[in-house]
Image 1 (cartoon, helix red, strand yellow):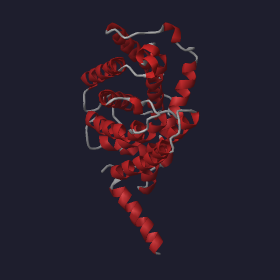
Image 2: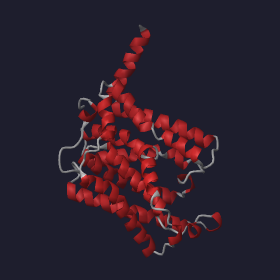
Image 3: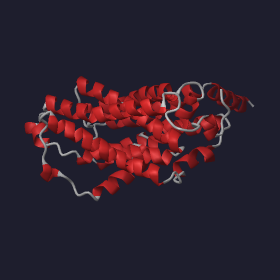
Image 4: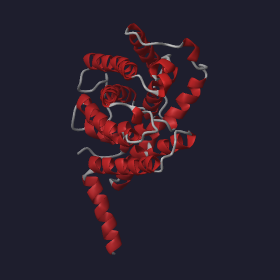
Length: 296
């Protein structure tokens, strides 16, 4: 009897504190797994990448627990990841906009003296693998939590822009273990580069909100997310010039980060100007009902 009462009390607490519970579970799941990866000193490898990707399932795990405890609809929530009927226009944007962001960033990089190496350009077909991997394991898996759960609950109380910033700050902080792991890309960045990355995350959060609010599809957001992440593979920066003798050139690496962030920020500002901060979309926007929960 006591165990049943305890379980009921826990579910009730989670239901009363949905967002706090989501963040607590999300951070705990990811930080424990990625913290262990950092603590054991695992070198950069496919094994490390897979384990870090597994840790990236913190947001959907957190969302699933809260939806279950709050009496929501798990099938409806997961169904957002399989919602692909959004029209050719939105798929063209989800697949094409990352390329435009890359081109804009590279143009700025070159304009300010960034060295490029055309011979290092990878086989274009590898993008299909990068896109598939990024959608289900390398970033896109997060979006069932951040966009498919947290964002709709926030939008029941706040504007789409404010909700995007709250999600963005939570999303940025959640990445902390990667910055504490010297073997990851993030772990090798100086503070200035890390701060520019945070700006990119906040701008990206606005873009992700716009995609989600316009389509209601977590799948579209995950593909778009994977596309933006994957475009880094095709940046033609001269890696030898960026890190001569294995020592990173601070200025060039900062330039690459800044010129990558500027198109994201410009796009975010443009979207807010066009669609307005309240909805960041033309029609009705998703709220708690998309996961079967009552508004609060």
